Image 1 (cartoon, rainbow, N blue to C red):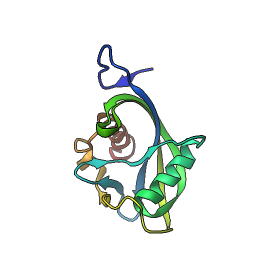
Image 2: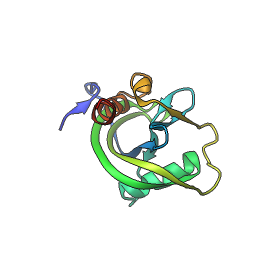
Image 3: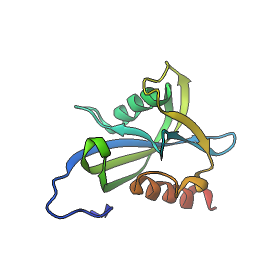
Image 4: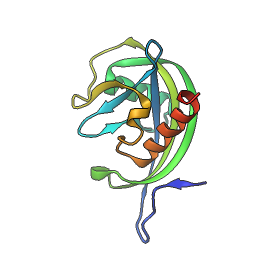
Length: 145
């Protein structure tokens, strides 16, 4: 199993499984990303006994207010990251491709802005290296044809 990022010696990392999505918009082939002071793929940590898909659906409603549909597995990546206030994390990220479905309710994460962007323009702008890796794979597979 290959990891993205460098593991620091003599440091304990907390395991953090997560589920993330590249949300596609058919009409203009843009993708949805989240923005605070940084850019990121939508999604987050898996809680308790959730499956990755269950966590993804919950996270998308929390971050955007939308449910999702046409969920397809894309990749699984592993990474060592500094999760800032969450500490040093050993990430196991299950990544899907999906589409927005219906607006369900107002998002609870008020500091998150939803942006629709050209994927290739944001490969180098995402905050986490593992998310840049995933988006680069997506661009190579779906946009460079």
